[in-house]
Amino acid sequence: MSAPGRVPHRPPAGRRGDDAVLQARYRESLAAHQAGRLDVAEAGYRAILQRMPKSFHALHMLGVLHGQRDDWAEAERLIAHAVAIDPSVAAAHANLGNARRLLGRDDEALASYERALRLQPDNTRALKGLGLLLWQRDRPAEALAAYEALLALEADYSDGWIMRAACHDKLGQHDESVASYRRALEFAHASDPDKILYVLASMGSGEVPHAAPVDYVRNLFDKYARNFEEHLVGGLGYRGPELLVETLRPHLPARPPEVLDLGCGTGLCGAALRPFARRLAGVDLSAAMLEAAGRKNVYDELAQGELTDWMSSHRAAFDLIAATDVFNYIGDLEPVFAAARDALRPGGLLAFSTERDDDAETTLHRGMRYAHSAAYLQRLAAAGAWRIEAQHDVTLRHEEGRAVAGQIVVLRSPA
Image (cartoon, rainbow, N blue to C red; front, side):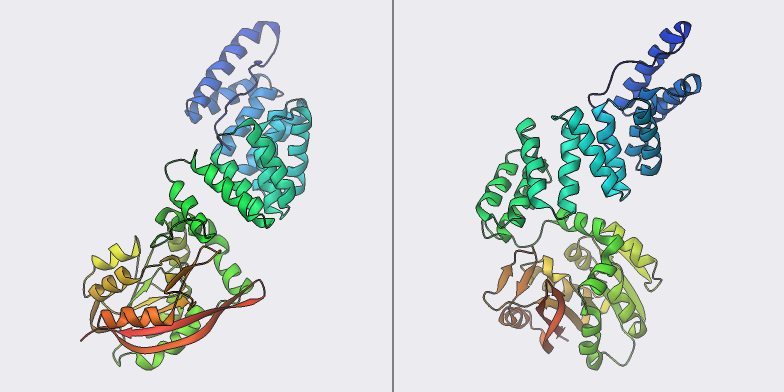
């Protein structure tokens, strides 16, 4: 829940003798809240509520404040109490909708947004929440209508154009989607343009970058971490670590190797590699993924960093580098291979999975993931004097009822 913007300025009313004191305290608290001094604002709202427990404004704004701290249960309780006292304020219903949506109470959230819009059809906060909720519930046509209404009021809202584009894409309206993404570029914040250009490239409407934007990958997996394994393994039948270990096992050295799990995620591959490793390190961009990996208690070391840079700074430190479901976010693998050679001891192994598409050396698909041809990997291996120990075609997972073609590759660095 964002910081308060336009909020009701009618101060709480108490007994006649208290009015001036309560009004002054509310104005001070609201000013502190808008300035980001949340502790001061909270103390002020609570002081008002001690004198007047049914102050709509103090309850509402205290609920907004708890939402800003991601305490959605308390935010919902306070704002619901405020709405019960005065159900005529659209902003309160919109904020209540946000709290209920973030608590997973979608039906109640939808009702709150609709109530806000009946009271105030141009309430942008309600339109934003409604559009997002409808999108999450796979109702793209209705979500599109909400974003159209929103953009008529806030034409410079870049996220609105992005969501409008996503709705058009979901509805199979390619040209409208591309046009909306391009409109979003006019207003995007500093970290957004690379992501938008990456999406456009995946739609065949722009130059394909060498890799996915670092911020995009980090944010994607920070958000994905909580449900990552349930979705990937349970929902998509992902078998990357299992297939990699099966392919790698005949090539492992007699002495247990020191292993780097590159792009370790939540530790799926690490758990499969642990029985063979003398020491196991993991590196990933996502702090949330690393936190989940740590809970597995299979790693001797975990580090956050960009993969190529991290390997380049750890020269001759490992006997084996493994990477599953990682190179899907990197188009040009030449720098990765070079950094892996630096990080491996002579004769060390690089084992990895990629999605396979032989139409071109590197292809960026609509799912915003790269695929690589078998010939491309063979060319890179030859250029770096790697020996190909194994290169097997596999099915990595299933998406929308179709098998995702991939390959497991094991390379040996020069001795």
